[in-house]
Structure formats: structure tokens, C-alpha cells
Amino acid sequence: MDRRKFLKSAAVGGVATAAFTTNLYARSTKRLKVCLSWPKTLPIMGEGALWFAKRVEELSGGSLKIHIYGANELVPALQVFDACSKGLIDGFHSGPYYWKGKNMAFALFSSFPFGMVADELEPWFDFAGGMDLWRKLYARYNLIPFKGGNTGNQMGGWFRKPIKSLADMKGLKMRIPGLGGEMMARIGVKPVNIPGGEIYTALERGVIDATEWVGPSLDLIMGFEKVAKYYYTGWHEPGSILEMTFNKRKFSSLAKEHQAIIEAATKEMHARIFSQFQYQNAVKLQELLNGKYDVVLGNFPDDVKKAAKKAIISILQEYSAKSKDFAMVYDNIKSFFPEMRKWTDTLPKWYLDTRDSGIIVD
Ligand code: CA
Image 1 (tube, protein in one colour):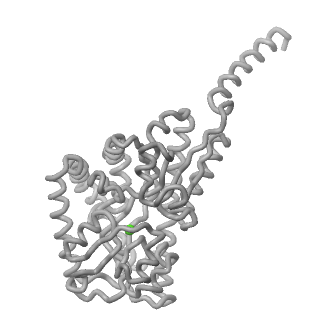
Image 2 (cartoon, rainbow, N blue to C red; image 1 turned 90 degrees about the vertical axis):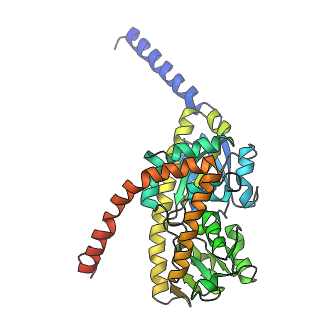
Image 3 (spheres, rainbow, N blue to C red; image 1 turned 135 degrees about the vertical axis):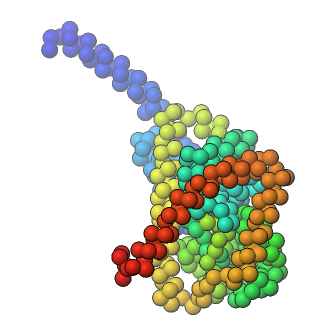
């Protein structure tokens, strides 16, 4: 290469490098504060948020750092929405149904009793309008949500006394948030919403008689089996979506690359948390079935299930009449769900055939 050509190509290279560095790496490191509605040591969920922060740092070459604060470290567990909306913190990892007091439509983004399961919720969010509606409603609070995990189907909860019929539910104080709580209220339960970290003590002291939380994966880590012996399967949260939500103005002010990194890392975290829940639920359910704990595992009696189903149908209708936002989201779900369910219905058919014939497991 002659000298003139070399100088020319070096100059082109120099321009390209300069453009790249001013684009991302030459900027000073951006730091974001993200608060959780649970302890950061909580397996799967808290650990998932810490994993997200690490992933963002890796993908951004250290130019974007997320500091994770556990529940109550910086902001009380259930005040993260307000704090982020006001810009006091930059993001939060929580669940949309905690904010139904602000807009009852938010509860629908968490999944609702007898509603869509995880396999159905995911395509609804990604391709059938769910995410657009969620972002549209959160934008009023200066927030932009991302999916932050899916718990899969949740267990119905832990009870200090056995539930033999609907009459046994009457007057029980139970920790159960969202539309599940409203449904339980209609069948005689007194629902309360307390953050995850405070449930064990409330149950142990008899402040509450029962609680739901997630499933065997996390419930056994919380130690609920020590203070409530009866554990029932559930239909109140068929596939709850968690959220990793950011202050919208703050998010918009980030470099496009950083925005894309957050979007990619939330998707990885979301998939990771769902997968881990499914895995750990299977492992811990087997421990329960093996009799490792002094727990009576069962299903709610039929009259409880029947009354609960009737209750949620009337709640969904009443809220649709009361709130335009709720009706907008619920109508969207109703327009999508029948087609989706025809497809997911094919699963139990071949799954049961396979199980009964022992092709995979004998
Ligand atoms: Ca729950």
C-alpha cells in the first residue's frame, strides 16, 4: 500500500472509530436504580432481577449499570410503582395486579382466575395487542413496562385448617392479591394484600388464616409448610406475568443502544424466570409427593371451584361496565382467546394419550 492510500484508509478508519465511540462507549457510564417488590435474595424472582442487572452490564460493555434494591431497601415493596412514576427511582420488578387500585385494568395484565395460561398469555402480549394496551395505560403514569417473568400456574394456597366445603372458606383472612382476591371476597373470604416478605410472620402469628404465594418452587423456601399444613392446587393465577417497568422519560433519554439492551435483557430474564419456575415447581412437587414435608396436598372441593368461577365471571362483567379501560383490555382478550384455546386444547389431548400409553414415561 502506498503512503497516500494508507493515510486515506487510516483517516476513514479514524472517522468510523470516532463515530462508534461517541455513539456508546465514550459516554460516561449510565446508572439506573431498580427496586423490587420482594427481597433480592428471593430465589428465581430476586435472583432473576440480579441476573438481569449483570446481563445488562455485560451486553453494554459496562456502559449501563443497574443497581438492584430489594423490597424496602430504598422504597417500600408496594410503593415502587409510585416512586418510579415520579422519577424517584428508574425502574421496578413487581407484578401489575398490585396496582389495580390505580386502574382496575392493570389486574388483567397479570392473568386472571380461570383465564389464559402462560402459553396463551405470551402470544397475547407479543402479537395480539396485550403489550400495546399495557404500554398505553402505563404511559399515563410515565411508565414503560416490559415482561419480567411468568410464574406459570400458581397453587391455590396454604390453609391452617382443611377446606372440606365452601362453608370452610367463609370469614377466612387470606393473603391473595389481584382479581383472585376479589373473587375470593365474593365467596366469603376476607382477602388482604401483603408483600411476599411479610407473609410468613402474618401466617405464623395468625394475623391471616391462609395465603397463596406462587407454587412449590418458592412456597417451600418461604417455609409456609411449617405454619399451614393444607396445600391446595389452584386456578386463581393461571400464568402470572411479572413486570420490569421503567420510568418512561428516563428510558426515552437513554441511548438507543441502551434501550435495545434493556429490551433484550428483559426478554432473556423473562424466559429464564419462567423456565426456572417450571423446573423448580416440578422438583419441589415431587418432594411433596414423596412425603418430605408434613403437608396435606389436595384440590379445593368442587363447590368452592364452582362458586369461585361464578364470582369471577360476574366481576369481569361488572368491571367491564364500570371501567372503559378494563372493558378495552378484556374485550381484546375475548377476541383473541377462543381461537387460542382451540390450539392449546390440542395439547392435553396428545399429552394425556402419551402419558396413558406410557410412551415417554412408564
Ligand atoms: Ca400469587
